Image 1 (cartoon, rainbow, N blue to C red):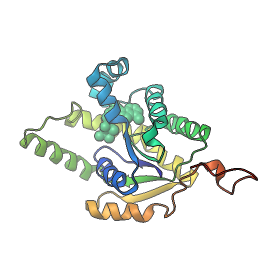
Image 2: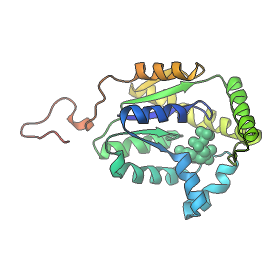
Image 3: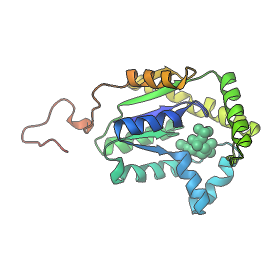
Image 4: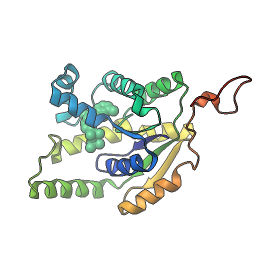
Length: 214
Ligand code: ADP
């Protein structure tokens, strides 16, 4: 199963990704997490990304595309993956299409978590307040001004992916404002019952003498 979770910050992508990981035995690939590790480790990419992330802007396409291309190659991603936070721009989506096509792979679905922006802001603000109350460390980009920038970046650069994937026929939209278990149920219903699980080039039948790959 190869999936993308699409939705603005705070839409609940991480929560739903964890469930899908458990259900399908696939890995969650979050570019936000990967970039935060790079920042923490002080790698060249991390040093480049730090300031960009802190103001809620997007890291350059070539940087994140490079990270994802490498990550998808790793053994644990063979069975499938959920991309969370990637792609975030149309050029990233086009690059992903090329990366998958080169490997004879295809996406099973792109799940859009649709949310109301005003409610979203409230949701994130209360999440921040709860974390503060528990004395937990906040992310550097978890503050109202940066949140505003992250939402603007989503609206301007990421929202066009909804039409992009609708045209490809893989978009499934669910209501992200529903309670968590209901969102989960809606995602389950939206997913193909038989994930392709095999390279796209095999769809339509194998050629003579061709062995199905494991
Ligand atoms: P959010 O909670 O806003 O969905 P993420 O954890 O996915 O946040 O990402 C945090 C930050 O990392 C983004 O604001 C952006 O600066 C950077 N980032 C993550 N993924 C990408 C991407 N695919 N393209 C560009 N920048 C990214």
